[in-house]
Amino acid sequence: MNEQLKQFVIERKMLFWSVEDPTALSLESVVETILNYGNWQDFQILLSIAGQEKVAAIFVKETEAKKIRTNYRPEVKNYFKLYFHKYAR
Image (cartoon, rainbow, N blue to C red; front, top):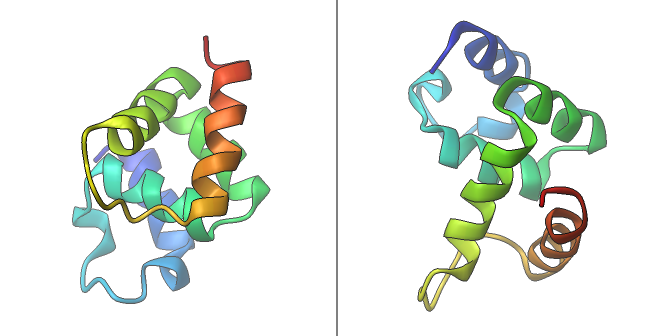
């Protein structure tokens, strides 16, 4: 995790309350948490740190894989599926 992403996670530690050391999380876990529980500003900052294409790729990989279960809430999954389809091509 790069320093910018670490600082981002530390500043939003309330979103990662169940994790002992949120700075040790993978980018995939950070993306999932921000999309599920963050606000629009959190999302925009995440895009500026990780890049829209990378965040979109992580989301698509996690939601469109042949998984029976994902941790994305249904309304979040639907919204960001539409969002990334339109803006991350």
